[in-house]
Length: 216
Image (cartoon, rainbow, N blue to C red; front, top):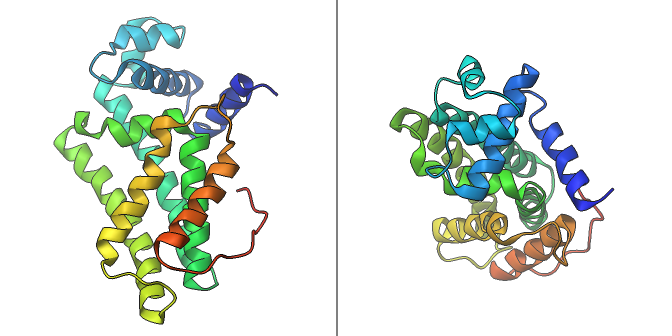
């Protein structure tokens, strides 16, 4: 399967919970348009055209362009929270949990770089109410990662003087993958995840861990 076909398949899976089909097509089209042109430069006509629909048909499913961004942001941030939660709650040492958290979080931002770029860099376009809700999801993700790092610092597995600052640095490192990653580049999402996990363990002063062979 080529890179374009692979990405299309992943996008279909990503929005599988959005129904009916017309609403799902609009979400997928909006992600593409927002990522390519930016939220403010994208019109509802652009989105509807990409979805093969009339502008009037869009309003049957979404009242505004901002509502589409909110739907996309909610799905994306809930997925990011589940990824971090699974790693934080898994058995194992703090270094093992940090490795798995970074590996899966960075990998997701590479594999779903188009969506991730929209949900991470278009937040300011949300209404105050919607922004507050999404910000709450982001704080939960932050707390989960911070707890892993704090556990490692408390046990002596990590050499970290500033746990909140280190947490911010790790999250920023992973999120930025969405900005530069290309499906046509030299690294796969799995390779990016493995590289970033190793870099972060070095950042917190933990010894290297054996490769797990995981790709999820």
